[in-house]
Length: 129
Image (cartoon, rainbow, N blue to C red):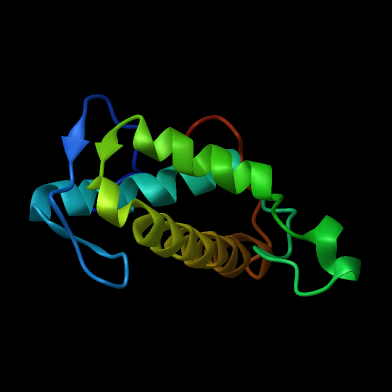
């Protein structure tokens, strides 16, 4: 049986330990929810029409996810998760990097599962068969 998509979380979770590179590492159950919630926020709130997560030069600016959107994603994530104050900046950098990766993976899967197979995604809340 295939699992369904992750839904927006309810409740509050506390990340007690963050690695020096900003990766949340404890408690394990909260970390799993944290990573899944990152993907959920990106999939549900960032249009896949953005080609890039970050613009490398001014000409790419309109193809990239705006900084205000990234800040909004971080603030939405913080509504359900608390990270240690001393690790917040590194956690934010790592989290936004993870979100960029998740957005690209989501877009690749849409292309592989729908565009390349000639299927149309139905926006009824369930994936097309």
